[in-house]
Structures are given as structure tokens and as C-alpha cells.
Length: 296
Image (tube, one colour):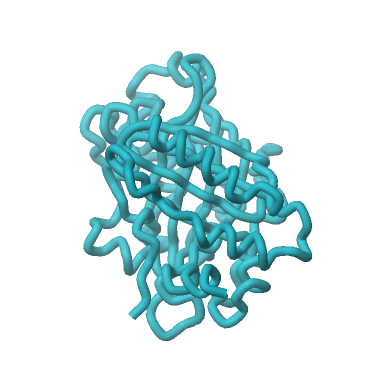
């Protein structure tokens, strides 16, 4: 039995930081991998900090070829959809996602992670996020209504035993900026048709439009993923950090193609009110794989 990284399923944390790194020297990945896998939560924190450590899939294949699932690739090129819509690929070499009950401990740990990796990698993307009205995003709608329960989440998110990368997960990380003025100018019933759900109680519409967000990302069609989305940004410029875990990258890439209009020619209506800014895939290995890197 292999052990997944606990931070994947650590629900209820209200403060988050996503740190994306690029290697200073791609030929010296062994020192970087050892330093990254040696990161530890401090013994004295109020509330504690959870970690999720991920690697660019191609880099992980170099670091641990026997523990790398086949066919998993980075977000190495833009997704070009209909109407000139583009989801940018902004792939980096590694991710450290920190989450905790208060931002001060997350902040302190983020600084210690950056110091620990100095000389190996540079911080190239940093995003802080926080919970909003328990489980809503900044459109005002509940986020993650279709998420599997914690009992079912591991089967959706983790590679099964007996395959390379067992208990690991493929993570899609994107940052979407909301077009706040345009969105908030819409009446609620139009917002609901765009989402495919009611705003107050998140009930799926019986006759939802085929270009609604729910219809374009239907998990019955693409397969279950485990979402850990969070709001980010300032009062007047904000959006959603999409954090999606899957045992199969095709579920994630198929969903993005559908949103972009590449599956049926019909683009997700929500993409007319949100703008994708970043896009990366990471492989999140199991605890035992990280331990082997540390010990080596």
C-alpha cells in the first residue's frame, strides 16, 4: 500500500499559497528534487500547514522513471478554442501548495520553502487564496457541487495500486480572472443559465442550456475529478484558482477541450465572463516516492 500526500484531501483550510518554481539549471534536478522532498512542516505552528508537492510530468519521469505514469504531459502549449478563445499553457517545473487555518502560518512556511529551494530554483508564480462564504466562489455560486465525497475522492483522484505512480495524482492548476463588471451586470436568472445551476441552493437546472458550465464540464461524460478550487485576488480584480486532481489526465484535458469548444463546437458560456491566465499540469507523487528522494 502506498500513501497519498495528505494535503490533497485536507478540506476545511481557509488560507492557501501556490508557489510555482522553475529550475535554475535543468541538468541539476537531483539536488532540487532532494531539497523539495525534504521540506517539512514546522513542529510548532498554530493550526498547522498542509503541503502538496508536485513536479512537471516530464521532470518527474526523469527523476523517478519507475514511479511515473505513462502518457502524462505538461501544459506545454496553449489550447486554442472557438471564437479566438485561448487557454494559455504556462507550465513550470514544480509546485508547492500550502494550506492552513490562518494566513500567517502559511506565509511563514512559504518563505521557508523559498529559502530551502534557493540555489536550485526560482519562484516564478505565486498566488494566495482564501475561502469565501464557506464554499462559494466570487461569482456567488457554490463551487464543487459535483465533487465526490471524501470516501469516494481517492478513487477519482489517485492512481490505483499496481501501476507506476500508484497513490499519486495528476493535478491541473489554473488561474481564472473574473470579468466582474460584466458578470455582475447580468440578472441572476441569466447567471444561472450560464452556470446551469441555481445560485442560492446550487440545484442543477432541469433544462440547462447545452453551453452552460455544468453541461460543458459534465463529469458523467469526462469522468470524476476532485476539485479544491479557491478564490484569489483583490477587491476589484479577482477570480478563481482551479485546482483539480485526477487519476487520469484525459479527464482534465477533455474537460478543458470541451470548455474551449473543441468537442462539440460549442464553447462554455462561463468562459465569456472569465479569462484563463495560467495553466500547468503537475504529477503529485505518493509519500513513499518523496521519502526515497529525500533519503537519496
